[in-house]
Image (cartoon, rainbow, N blue to C red):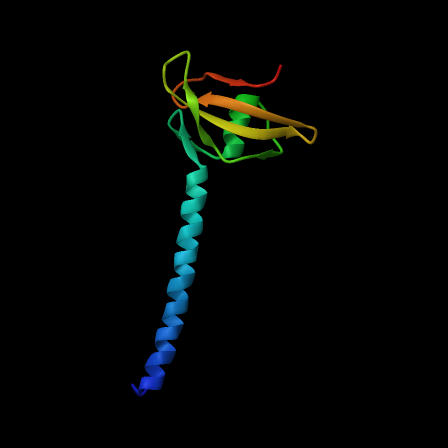
Length: 107
C-alpha cells in the first residue's frame, strides 16, 4: 500500500471488523460461562448438574440459578436447575455445591 488516506481507511475498516467479531466471540464465551457453575470442585453445565441429581441423562436443562436455601447436610450454598428428563416431564432440582445432597420436586 502506498499510505494514501483511502488505503488507511480500508485497513482500519478491515481491522475494525475483526475486532468487532472478536468482541462478539468473547461476549458469547462469557455468556456461556455464566451458565456453568462449580459443584463439588468441578465446573458443570446445566445438563450435567441435572444429570448429577437425576442419576441419568436428561433431554434439556434451563440455566443454573442460585437457590434461596442452604444445604441441610453441610450448610453450603445450593443451586437450582429445571430440566426435562423425558418429553412429558419437567422437574426442578436443588443441588449443594459442596456435598452430595440434592433433591427434586417430584412427589
